[in-house]
Length: 98
Length: 98
Image (cartoon, rainbow over all chains, first blue to last red; front, side, top):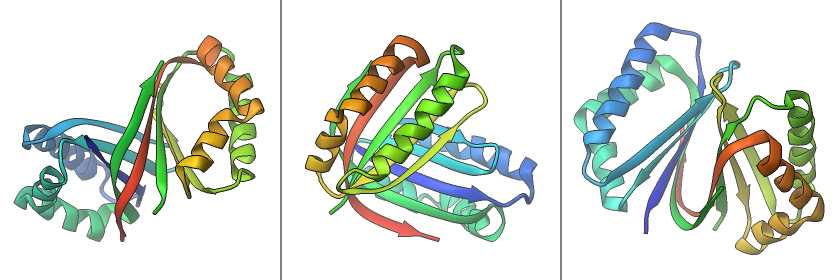
């Protein structure tokens, strides 16, 4: 059974170029993590964003959260790029598509 | 323990005004449903969107899915507004914020 991490955030207007580069780097790094499945992201022009990443296990999510490069970027996120964010770790119970 | 419904979609470029109105109506209608907690939504300029709604129970999600007005709009979504969409029903296991 897969898991989803729902990351909702509000951007500050600081350091947009640094943010875009760090965001791309984190996506590339996450894709190399064990247990990574997929990531989807959207952001409104007003700055509200939702990123959902999918993982094979809670252990895989824990390892990603503790990844040293990811932790350095998490600190920059709090200091600079996000005025607020929320993280929810969820177990996927059912799924359907069109 | 709360539940999240992750709705990811790709918009067609058809009937933008009808879509915006229907989307606003559905948000307003969802907020009146028993067990509704909150909804968050973001869409990229390219048309990829993520909407996450939060609910108190699986039963509340089922009732919303079966709501007659919601079902009529789901049909229009498939016929007209979305080229594809995916729905995931998830149980929230952990939550933290900054």
